[in-house]
Image 1 (cartoon, rainbow, N blue to C red):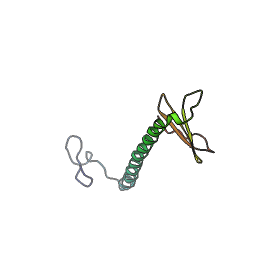
Image 2: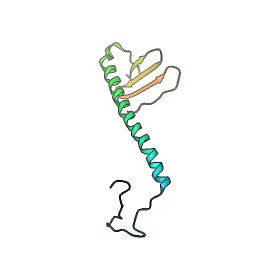
Image 3: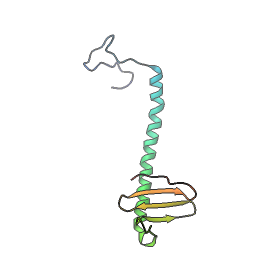
Image 4: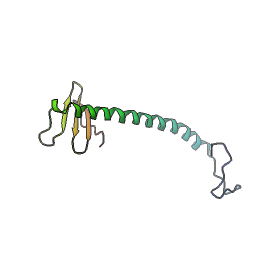
Length: 106
C-alpha cells in the first residue's frame, strides 16, 4: 500500500484504535533515510564489483606477486596502498601504506 493511502489494520478494519498512527516527524525521517540508504546500497554494489575485479586480477597475476611466507597470502603494494589477499578465505585487505589494516570482509 502506498503512503498516503488509507491504511487498514491487519484484519482490514478501520476506526479509532485500529488505524496505524501517522507521525509527521517519523514520516520526514523515513523520507530522509530512504534515499540515503538507497545511495549506500548502490555504493555497496559498486564497491563489491570493484572488490571482485581486484580479487580476480590478484589471482590472474599471482605468479608475479610475492606471498607471505607464513600465511601464503598474495601481497601487492603500490605507492599508496598495501593489498593482502588471504587464499583460503578470499579475505581482502586494502590499506594505506602508513595506516592500520582496513578489513574489507571475506
